[in-house]
Image (tube, rainbow, N blue to C red; front, side):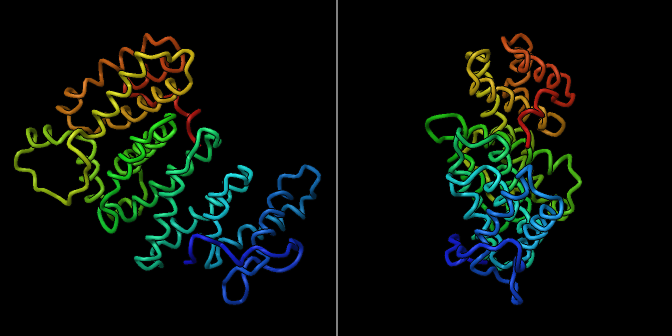
Length: 320
């Protein structure tokens, strides 16, 4: 895998000729500008169907080159790029994680993981929601493959994002990561998760459940690898955030409302498997019920579904 910089890739531009990779499976110095050209062509309403098909074929071919992840990071991490270009960059990273992870060395996988962490750290309120959600999904895809393995400090990384001062955009990102991780590990049918289900499910119980509750409920529970950051647990943190949001201006403050909906979505995903004593101790159920009387209809709807343990129908607007 190449370094985070795709230097030497961008020079020249000729979408009509050449392949995405040379005979050695490497990008040549026309790849980056041809990516820009191809994406512009695809989204140009005046392009012919044949031109679009050729452009799409080229973009697919880029996924096969050795430098595809570094090209993806270069495209996705450049704020001046259009959302379409950045999303394509994220798709290159996604393809590498999903389809090539097993072929990478530990060091190469580490580079890929660190690129995802950098993208998560750099999310901004100015980024379209679909880009932020995509970064969260990449985080979970990496976690499914190496958390409680080569990656032991994921919970600490989440805590660092959670504590980021300023706008709530990093909290929203963490909430979506937690919701998706819970769904993938306990409700999904991913083959990658199935191979590591024991490790992942136990680690999820560890990081979501307060340490005191775990010790009380399961005094003889065999200790696993140390994966948690602090004794509070995400169930308590999310429940406290929901309580704070519902005490705020959910009607007029979009950030408060979004955090409330995200928090409800996380709590809904935890209800089927969370330790009952932890649910009671967190006080999340009364807060979920309080949301029924919230001053915004979206929060009311999501609270209603979460309280009934039904699918959070208000949440799809917050998904990719």
